[in-house]
Length: 322
Image (cartoon, rainbow, N blue to C red):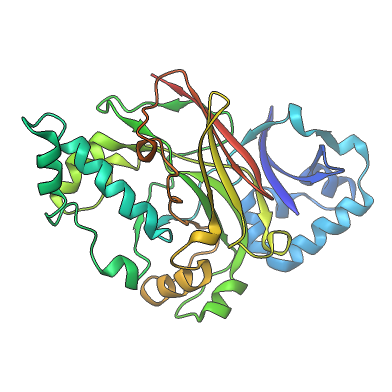
């Protein structure tokens, strides 16, 4: 099942993809079927409804008419969860962390008399040295769940940054609360999956990291989610998804969730032992290896369009505005 949120004159509504190219307005279809539409008022409401809500959607799809559907390519999509209950971003791909730290050290040393020597020295400092803990634990930071944007929304370049970057990853949507879970129990808490672009202001990230407080302002200005949530049953194994990133139609990145160091369910299990899962939260897998412009030795520019793609999910596109 592929679930969307979209804008109409009456606000944001939820829909399900039918016939491969149409979007069924769930609230409208429910009212036509004798309901009041409230259980489909938002994606968070659907998630709160649990398996029974998905069963009810299946029944609506079976009885719906074209009167309550619109062409998917003409719908004004927004983030499938416009305001998640919580947003975390994790480091399931340790290889990305190994690569990006070297590139960030080069960025920090770019104005030194001998940039290469300065970068090498920085890599031996606590700020840039990759700690042992990232191999042993799947670490995460809390993102800004009030700064989420959706498909085709403009990405506002942060005023205080000169180096903007995309990050290619998957967002895991949590379906129910859970605490102290085994990996098997964590798997049962997953509602579905979406694409996630953890936009990063690299120069700000390097600067604020000196404080020891994490990426802070370098990350929390915007996160893209979309185009839809694909339910867990349809995805099957989240460790077999092909990923790519395209800038103005040119492929810049390619990767796969097969290359994760920390598996999705093991990571979520770890998190649940520290901070309970919240229904409706989104947990980013972190970026796949070479899943950013910085890792390619490239720089984004204002006006460029970044498109992330994931097999089984679709594509998520945003154009940079400054």
